[in-house]
Image (cartoon, rainbow, N blue to C red; front, side, top):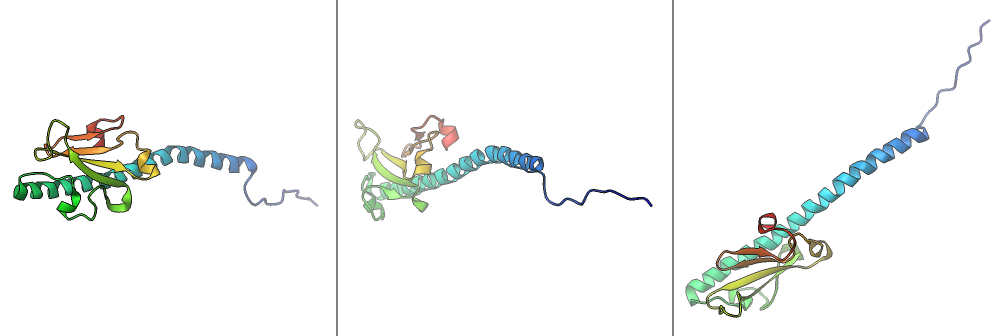
Length: 148
């Protein structure tokens, strides 16, 4: 008579297999999360850009009838004279004269300012600006091409 000695069938994962899986997931997360945050920041930035363009369109319509720009955004039909929130509340947009030497009737500067922690952490672009002469700008460390 022969006796077979076999190991009982094991179920589950070994500790080594589990640690390898955790390490692979950590590497994937370390690569994916910063990329995800970057894309979310860009999408929020686009809401500020679109509000800047929307208000500049209203400024140009106002200019054609009044031959001047305005820093009071209620003149354009917005509920606030000062900062107007963009969709989602990620940015607020305010109007001012382009500089102290150029009066408001000749040039208006719109500034979109980030409002929450994720938008304020956008050090690449910071505040976005657009003036009635079509010049776009940013206050961050990036370039206009990166931010617009």
